[in-house]
Structures are given as structure tokens and as C-alpha cells.
Image (cartoon, rainbow, N blue to C red; front, top):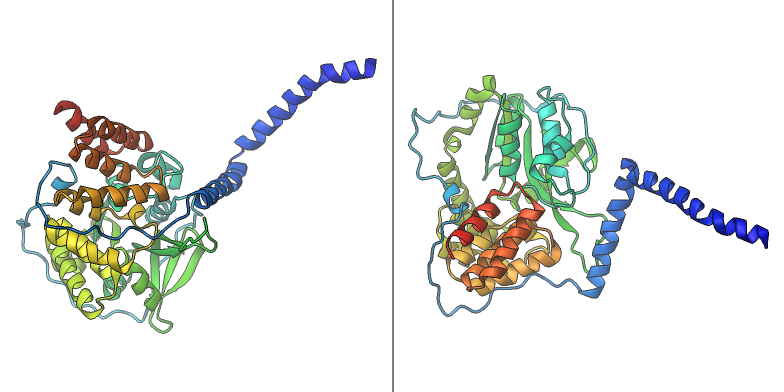
Length: 414
């Protein structure tokens, strides 16, 4: 009897000790890296069983299109036709070497959903920067489970936290352009397709987005050298695969370079130095690709995205319609948001609501989808729901200026 009483009194102390050990074990960063990722996959898989994943919704029948406008901050980001202060430089003739291999920066394995900050950290490290991906993600994605970082957020980090370096990004790139930068001693960061090795949920199409840093090429093997934050350092990436996987993101490329390389960058870019000219050329490229491969959903999607830049919303909406009819990946609206603008500005609110709701099923914490669901609610006169969505977007990313603008706009214009 006394033995049982002793055990009974010792039990709370034992639980406290085990709890303390367990807490210290869980607080260990290595433990979190291992188990948080598994927990996320398990919870997403269970959700996929309870609510099976279906293909993205196709366009709703449209009796007509009404063109409307709304003063969002996103709308003001597209600059007017450029008025250059000096003549646009003409690309200099350059005989490319058959191979280039730039010094590889110290490789860094990405944290959960952190390929953008990890790739940018390696890029900055090429120029002697001493930080890591977490310095970057603390600003651009304060929530660790934020699954997307936009290129403008990465550029913002460089401008505000590494101002001794210049940063530019453009679209409509090609393989020769990538080689020219590498031959000039400038790595290039691109956004491309990525495929998971195993499903996150039943019927997972495995598709996602990924930022990749290129540091060399070899014409003999027809490969680029990449510093891939997911797979490893100094990996080979075939020209053909890169071309195909890069198309999905409008051939986007980001450049970081010191001041002494600024003139070189301008000369290589040529006309593409002017952002509006670059977008016009990307628009024409997308138009050609829809003609040469009319069954390519990504060509039509790129066409819509470039039309959105020029605020040609009715045409953009029709291009996105075609892309949606042909079929898009399940996570497309996690990374690209042009359709949200196109449908909003053509008063196709039901289509907007359909795709943002789908996006939030795939990515419940997407601040971009929450923002545009809020604008959809606003257009339908559901002001309190709009305010709730804008606030939710800010909870997910307190540094999201579009959500703060939206909230202020609605509160100040009841």
C-alpha cells in the first residue's frame, strides 16, 4: 500500500520532468525541421481525404463583359510608357564561350516553403553578403508556413537590406540571355516548375514553383549549372528542361549585381532595360507561343499576365479563360495572381470568387487569395466579409502593403 502511495505522489513530478524534456526536445530547431514538415504533410493529406482535390474550376459562361476599374495599389505598379533620360543602350556583340563556371556560393538547404529566400541568400552570398535565408524570410515571409514569396518581395529585400547591390527583374527571357549574363560574371535567378517526389494528398498533380540560381553553363552537355536549394549544389539542368519549366513563369529572371556591373547589365538587356518595352516584347512572345502551340495552357496564361500589365483586362480575361479551359496545375493560384485582377476589373466576380476559393483550399494562408476574396466581397457589397479577409491577409503577412491599402480604403470609404 505504501509503495502505491509513493508512486502516486511521484507521478506528477515524473510528468513534469518528462514534459520539460519533451518541450526542450520539441524546441530544438533540428526537431522542428524534421517534424513540422511531416506534420504539415499529414494534415494536408488528411484534408485531401476529407475534401478531395478537384481540378481548378473552368470559366463560367459569360453573357457579356463590363469593364470597371478600382484604385488598388497593384494597379498603380504598372508604369506608363518609358521616357528614358538617355538613349537605350544597344546590346553589344558578344561571342559566348562554350562553357562558363562561376564560383559557387556556399550552398544552403531551404527551410519549409523557403526556396525564394534560400536562393536569394546564395545569390547575395556570391557578392560577399554574410546572412542566410532566415534574415530574408523574416522580412518577406514572417509566417514560416507562408508558401509563396513573390519576386517583387525578393527585390524589395535587396533594395532595403542590401542597398550596396542593384537588383532588377524582367520577363520574357531566353537561354542566350541567361548565357550572356553568366559569361559577364553575373549569376541569374529564375522561377520555374518543380515536381514533388511524393503526393501531399490523394490526386496530387505534384506540381509547384521553385526559385533556382544559375551559376554556369556548358554547350557540350547542353546544361546549366544550378545551386538548387532543395536538391543540392552544382547540379546540371538541361537546356530543354529549363526552357520548358521556365515558360510557366513567363520566363522570369532576377539579377543582383554591384554598381560596377550596372552598365554591363544595361548593355546586355538592351531594349529590355525599359520595363514597359520588356513587357511588350514578352506579350508578343506569348502571342507567338499561343499560335505555334495553341494547346499550351501556360502560353495562354502568360498572354493574360502580360495583358494585365498593360491593363488590357478584357483581353487578359479571355486569355486566362483559354488557359483554364486547357487545364492548369492545382497550385497555380498559389504563385500567380493575374487572373484575380483580370476578373475583378471586368466585373466577373463569380469567376474571381471561384478561383480564390479554390486557391484557399489549396493554400488556406495565402495572403494574395485572401486579399482578392476580400475585394470580391467588397464588389458584392459584403463589406464586413471584405474587412475580415483584408485583416486575415495582414495576419498572414503584416508586411503586405496591398492588404493594408485595401483595409484602409474600405474603412475610409464606407
